Length: 138
Image (cartoon, rainbow, N blue to C red):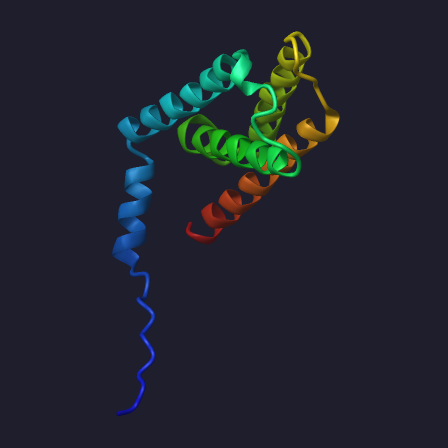
């Protein structure tokens, strides 16, 4: 019995068209903005609780920073900053800097430029990938 490799499913023009129209929906953009604000609020609220002290140990703390700020960047891109990668990186950098300043003011927490660098890296990676995809699918 011969082994048949699974066929790749082609991405059709109609699928791309539906993805574009979904991404342009006001409801979709509003939901993404709500998710971004939820993530940012949660970042500061949970970060101020005693449970946040030592929650992630190195190097997992950097993975957590990358994932969190990557999701914030993604949600901000789809909500209000699509097509503006430098503004997206600046906005995520501002949130990351505010988070590090907030951590410095909390007992048991410390701020670090290495954490901020990972936050900026996450925003830059997400902005680059999404901008590439946007230009490719024009």
